[in-house]
Length: 139
Image (tube, rainbow, N blue to C red; front, side, top):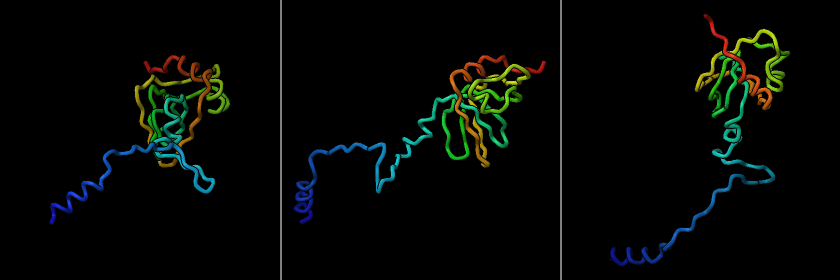
């Protein structure tokens, strides 16, 4: 009896599988939903940013990822002191002439800030300016 049931089940199974693509977005009731692995956090990867964190200070570098209260930057530099009216000005036009103390480049920096972040996306001009500054070193 069991053999007959197994034989019938084999006949019912499809012989080939149909692959269904996974859409990046979906609209339901005029609301756009984005797959988690296609979210803005992934889209920001690689951008040159300035990050102000409550406990870690201010860093400039290439955003690798952001998940919740953690940001990972590549080729980052700490901005100890900068000339310019605000970080917004630094992110748009770079560091102004004056007293600037910019740390040496670090290959990878992980910043955890439960209080949140300020993330400023830099212009090409600002990126070139910040990367061009000699590191501040204590002798």
